[in-house]
Amino acid sequence: METAQTVPEWKTTAAAIWAMMEETDRQIKETSRGLQEAKKLVEETSRQVKETGQYLEESDRQMKESGKRLDKQLGKLGNRFGEMVEYMIVPNLVEKFHDLGFEVEKTHRDVVIASKTHNIFTEIDVFLENGDKVIIVEIKTKPRIGDIDEHIERMEKVRKDADFHHDKRKYRGAIAGVVFGESEKTYALKKGFYVIEPSGETFNIIEPKGSYHPHEW
Image (cartoon, rainbow, N blue to C red; front, top):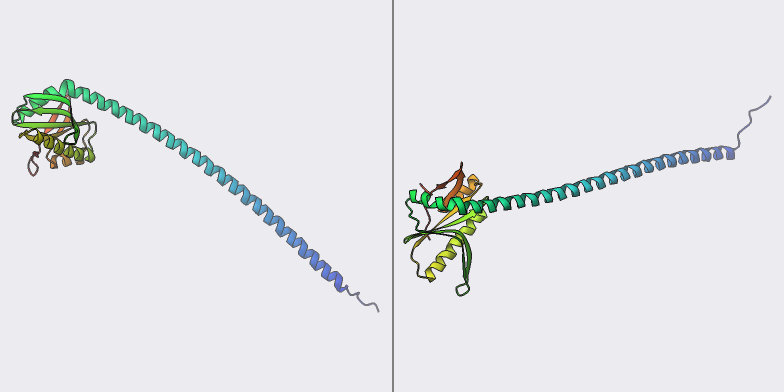
């Protein structure tokens, strides 16, 4: 009677080792494929980030150029508004303030105060005066809160200069603008300034009234 041959133990161990090596090789290949795919993903992500960075740089450049063009246009608009003040608004200011009870006897443009002795330096766009009062007009394309605060400082300098020259007249201020925001307009009136703004082919002067009143320096 024949008996089944027994497989040597070394062969069984070798087969197990071989199978383990094949499995390890398979896992290494899968890991390698995973790493290659991850590398491709990283490269693709890097490319997209680079393209996004270039796009952002280009967008930033275009925004800066647009900002420069806008500033240039606003500057031109401000210059044109200055010309309007000289040829149309200043003469009409006399009549407009007359309606408000202020008799203008003299008008001056681009007045510069430069007193080294008293350390007072400022510029005035429009200077309206008579024997009792003076109105100092500041002109801006689009007045902002900071512009109004600067005009307050200007009024204080003008008052100080007037005192040194024994000028006892009362000084009032006005802000003129092509575009006036509601908050800026309210702030200017609250500070006691006249507000001058376009209205059709002419302009209006809004006088501080009610809880507000013209401030005098």
